[in-house]
Image: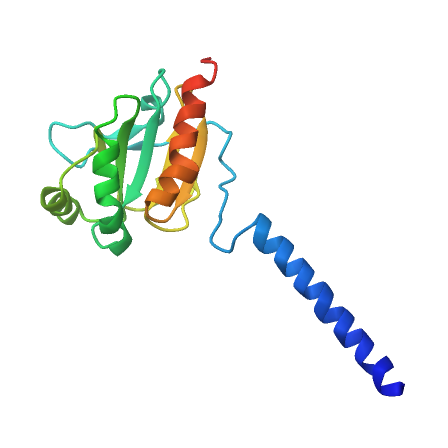
Length: 183
């Protein structure tokens, strides 16, 4: 009997721990990160152009009625190479425009990366010191933000864009942004 009473708190603790872990895992998978900027206006920033003939990127370039994907990437980033075909496919869509930001990269290496893999971006900027990334709340690269036609961030994907990220976050955010009232 004493042995059973001794084990009772341990069994109860393990049971509660399993229940709490299961609830947390269901609601917030370990790889899920929701940016505090979702639902808020894109931050104020201005970055120089990476390529001749293509403009840089600033807050003033967001909004204006167009849905924009802002993708932070780097030539030294292996997952950025993985997502690049997805970005290339997205660039063919008529309902969204892609803007790229080379994060903490040298201009020569960033240009070589785009020359090798192709350039899916309508604008490509350089964030050499990472100041704009801080304003956007980056945790690393690649990261992608969906910005609606009013300049409001509607979705954020931390990590490479995959088929799952497209179906679960990017495409639904684009659809919501298209149906949102314009201000």
